[in-house]
Length: 444
Image (cartoon, rainbow, N blue to C red; front, top):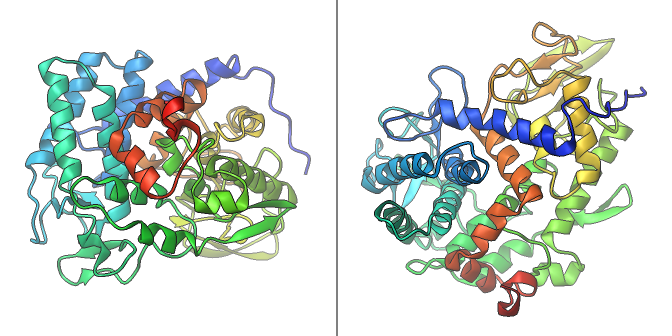
């Protein structure tokens, strides 16, 4: 298949296209937030609970919104205080209907009451994403007025009460989560590269409950260095793993022991992983429709399944929400334009044209009031909402946040610069063994 090249200007210059996408995507946070407590829904499906990670992204997104004129500073402060006040006063305890426990929060919360939803787990990594947003707000709103002082005070209190040592459950590495009915989950952040970089940085930098750096080195000792399409890199299949911690931390030029061994930093690693995804799209080993040099972006996303269907004489299995990856799968033909945008700082030379193709030729933007459709599958035989294939009917908070934050990091480095001033994250990175670059005092 020879894909049509992106047109030169489907939505103006590169900057104009990205500005418009950021504005449209931000409307999700503007319009879907609960006005009473500030909670952000996991997705637009009616009855969806809040995602604690999406809330953390919202706190960071409001910072971008101020700088880009999407919110007044006063409105962003009001939204931030609504959230921080709610979490500061919400119930922390072992009861099954609490909001959180030991400073952590449940993965999903009822949008109205803010209490645990769906008997979900107390999630360590989602709580870390929330805390990244909390600390971003604290390091951006530095004014001497009463409201901004309260933001910093509340944020500091929320971070200080997280008991990272408890989450070790007598080990060296952090557990995935805990449930009041059954205790700790049987999984740890101890095997293979993952989005846990931000989790460990926060746990190591805590002034109240810091973990031992041995847990971090135990985890990084399991990382897999692979050569794929003649590209050597630290492997993880889904794109979000190569993006999540980078939403907040600028990994350019800073190195831990693993980086010093491989000779590249995590930013360069994400650049290589992005190019691996594009090469996988070009090779298209499973023969999916619309995989090519502008057709890639496998990550954790919604999908058209679960279903097993014969398509053009081939039996295909389709999944619903799952973490798709390249080149080793799982893969059912579903790609996510948001994940392409979130790779913008790493590889703009391939991202920009892919974004334009998704807009101009696949029409993956326009029906949703909030920018891009969440995910797309041209192989699945359903074209009721898009002439080119199936698209997800919902918009997800965890997709919207990275679009806004990574466009901004690409254009101005705003979030990266803000987080560089966070003494807790800086200390956590240093305790993890990171050195060089902006972490050296002479560069800060």
